[in-house]
Image (tube, rainbow, N blue to C red; front, side, top):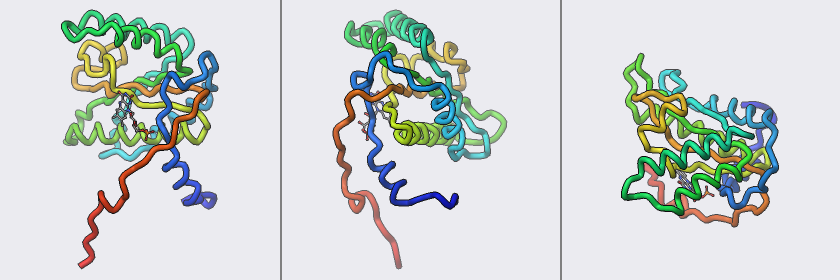
Length: 197
Ligand SMILES: Cc1cc2nc3c(=O)[nH]c(=O)nc-3n(C[C@H](O)[C@H](O)[C@H](O)COP(=O)(O)O)c2cc1C
């Protein structure tokens, strides 16, 4: 444990972390790439079974955001069939341009060790929580979305993922123009059972 670790500050960080959505971002105001790199280093320090480090991230920023917007909106149009909704298409086209950076969250399936798939997914989710907390610590805003083309098979290769791998969504990051309102959680006691004897 580093000497400067302060549990009260950490509790505050964890409990005040909020999702911040694209309409709350300050449009056109970028976060520093160097900060995004620090956030991604924190992501790679997540726990993972068998040291497989099954995360694979693709970062979009600048013109890259336009590429990502075009890719996901067009794939959605081609592949959504009867589920197609114009409003979703528009969102997929426009939302990326509100962000400073978008991190596509990939899970690279462990093939060399006998690790259940759910554990590769869990490890990546731990990495995403590190991203959430780091974004908050740097005073940025962001959220994890599993919308759009997240679960489209054809999306995988665009993000460097193979058939066995999974796309787990996108982490949008922006400078905060409109902070999120406070949130609530059920009391811890409702979710925890203690066994002491
Ligand atoms: C696995 C996962 C998927 C999510 N997908 C979406 C999503 O598709 N759209 C969305 O608006 N929020 C999504 N969220 C963010 C939640 O809406 C958000 O965490 C929730 O509202 C609680 O708010 P908080 O993060 O401020 O505590 C997702 C969160 C998780 C953990």
